[in-house]
Image (cartoon, rainbow, N blue to C red):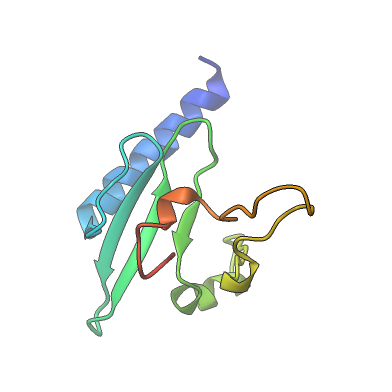
Length: 112
């Protein structure tokens, strides 16, 4: 295993440990190898769905609703937006439309 893969695994393990300490498992459950789905309750009582990409081959992405991520875009955390209207679009006229986000989000009603 390469040093970068070891570093990525260590980062993801630390992120998962932090999330396990502050959040509960999302009602849709965790996905064994690819994603961990969480539910965080804010101080105001809002339910915040969050998905963390845990597979070692992927970067450490956190998926969260745009509503809760608005303040992050101005900070040091890179934010990429995936709008609902961009889902299920074909690359060309000969292929079937694809989901367009991480498939583990499909079972999270608040994030799908």
